[in-house]
Length: 164
Ligand SMILES: [Fe+2]
Ligand SMILES: [Fe+2]
Image (cartoon, rainbow, N blue to C red):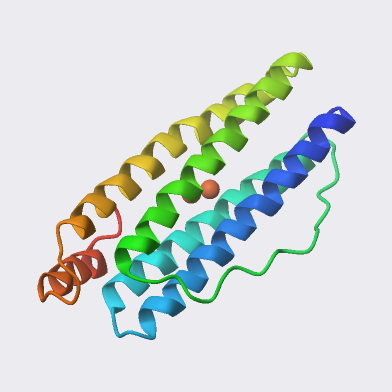
């Protein structure tokens, strides 16, 4: 059984993960509008992944006898600027999510909820990967001058492989 405090915190994270999905979907639309289809494809895969993260919380809340509570999802921005600005935002966002996950680890530890530990550790490891990927794409985009043809190589690369 989840304590009320943990149930509330997990429901907030469910909302935050679905918001992440929305954010990346908006970024996908932003890139698709500029025919940067590789970037758009990569963002859409991230959006799917974030939705799946939300569903992990949804299912885990149920598994522990809690009640998933669905709140309104905040609207993401519609304009994001250059690819460099977009990936700066992505990295900042992922760092924020990492802090939220670490906050959940602290809350569950304080409440003595050991059953949540393996579940949350999956997210701790996932955030290391997410930050690493965001950082590596940001570094690639940084090397590309504005309106340089090199941008299309990064775009094509992201269109082929979402994991890098
Ligand atoms: Fe996530
Ligand atoms: Fe993420």
